[in-house]
Length: 392
Image (tube, rainbow, N blue to C red; front, side, top):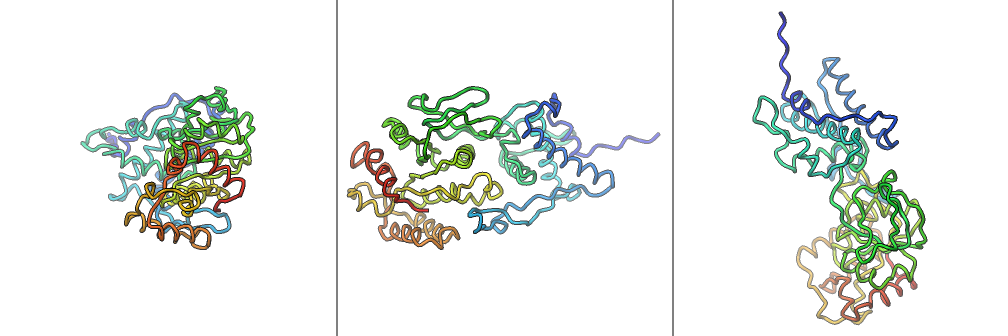
């Protein structure tokens, strides 16, 4: 009698993956049916290789700096064509191969069950000890996160389309009515806290019902956003007021992208006069190097930098007490940003960064409060908008 072959640790691990109470594909939202099809196709390729007694492998676009380039015509950062091949029958690659498929299996389960989970939740959903061993599928969250990103770029799908989300960070207020997961929300009636921009803002979750805004003012921090909201700037100037809690999350970037492209709203950015503020603007406008594979669905090349400007210390007659001396890291970062291809050829940006370095100090938007509590909402931004004093 033939003996039953032993299952590999990979097979054992995958057999422990969460089981779905599958919804019929015809009942899934179109975007979910598409994503599910991509995951299934990925699995089918593995099966075909196994049936032909070939070494199963995955071809994953390289997420490295060397595989990122500036597309001058499209005006955003994008990935190149380099690939990394991940083999099952390679001792140094087998675990990451298994982890990638395990994440795909977990996302398939979420889609079929029509549920979502956090990045942390997915880690715990898939984490277990492989049968017959003392080895864990993932030793830590740091082992799981890159696999999610690998799956995103391989399938050319946002992680939000894989039903995985990050924590909410960011807010919005203004004359727009939207539908969020079936609930109608009037963002002009959200009080002092505003509408919390969720991580997943795709069209099947968030639908725009009506909008009377003429533009979007995106500010860096919640503290500045609250001043604009309290002063009802958005009502006086018929705009949407958003913030990203510093570096904007993917949900905030996707929301801005959709508002700009679907509702044709111009975006003006009010950020700190420091290398960090310049970087935030760069990410919103051209995309980020780490997420270059998503620039086509996140970058907003038409976004404009409204301030704070290096010349504003003199122009606004600010006092020396609001100056923050540049650290060595600030100087180094500013020079790096000045060398970015999308900034290096722009004289205005070169002058802007050079002026900050010559000043030897940086300024936060909150420095304008030293003039008056509402100076930024009643004088600074209205004047810059009227005079079209912004950087592109």
